[in-house]
Length: 610
Image (cartoon, rainbow, N blue to C red):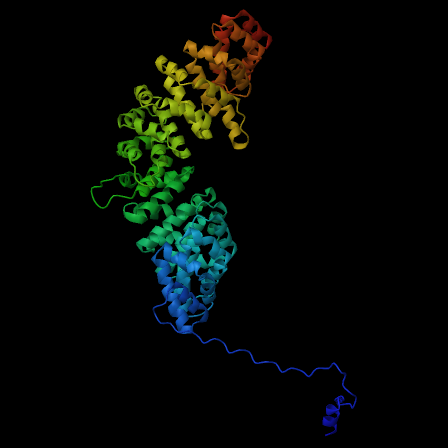
């Protein structure tokens, strides 16, 4: 009552200790109760994509599972549907559901796998955390979910170097390798698929996968797996075999003996087996011998056929892989060149050059013909007779640098056969060959120069045509280039090989035609050739002879460039072929010029040979 009276009179309430409370003290507020959560939504079955995504966030557990299943079906239906799911914000709640158990987890994983199959969603899925989430499922998910997790990683790795690197860094390899040995057939297939894509054109991953112990279980699946698993395992081994350090380990695991029978199975297994053998044979003599010993030549040639006697024809890609394997096996191997040609490969390979199938590649077929014709006159004539020249000339004009490179290489080898020279010129090959001298890759430039040299060799009319095609200035320009690193050897040449060596040979043979020699002189060619000779291009000696012979001004230019001393040095210290070239040049030039003969003696040459 006293307190009420004081309040009525404007007084203060007292605190528990009897002291008056300060005038600004406020009575504590009671904390308000939180609003009730929104009710969980039920699945009705008629929801659109946005409503389904809302169910992922706010649905009952049962509704979330059914919504995830519906979204998984929608995402698997096509790119537009997957795009709608991503646009509706479905990625984050689907990833959250991966932490759940049971059907909802599996349906969410399948939806993510379908979205990851489209390159446009790979970056957003990775940024949202799909990679560590999928790796977690590999470690702790149910058996039914592990194969989907492997599929997610396999899809995210398709043609995505950042994702390939991130997946391996996230620790995916042990789980994937474990699935190869312990998983059910679908899990094995998806694990092979993931390793295939992780290894594709990614050398660090190729090594890491082999080091993780994947080779032996992959090889085991070649013999024990179902056809789809065999195909995926062979595809993974194909990409692993692209790394030189893996070739021996794959062969040591008895992969070759398992791959060769697959060539006769047809379909995907045959295609990927051919690809694996192609890569195993590349630059590996031991594997090449093992593949031949395993009797792979006949089934490889049989794969090239478009109308086999039995079974369905192989896919274009399978035939390309078979051609690539034959290309690698025949390199510098005359007995195999004989056997492959005798097996009927030449017309089949030539036919592949003219096919216009969507996505067709021509490098392997052209490369196989290149190696079959290399220093093999009978095969050169057979390839030309089979009609290879027109499609090869057409390939020179295609935008693919590798196709241009291989076509020029084949034409270079074919042009060494006199029976093919007229056909090559008539097919209009000279202009694109000349164009490649300035715009092609290093190998394309070498092959183009070699083709021009072989065309001019022994055929004055073709030497004249080379000059008329304006080839001489770009040939001289090739001698003035100074590549670095691994291309430096190409400047010097070796036994006729290398860009500069081919260019110098082409100039030497073309300059047998007097107007061409005059053009080379007018372009400052004597000094260029002398410099190339000083750099070790022994083929420049013959070119100097043909350019300078009978022309006093050219001989003076050669003397001014120190040509006599360079020729003497080649005779003294060059390789046997270079010594012969230089000695012949000295004999020819000194007989034509007393001053040059004196310069040779002064340089320590002792005088021209008798």
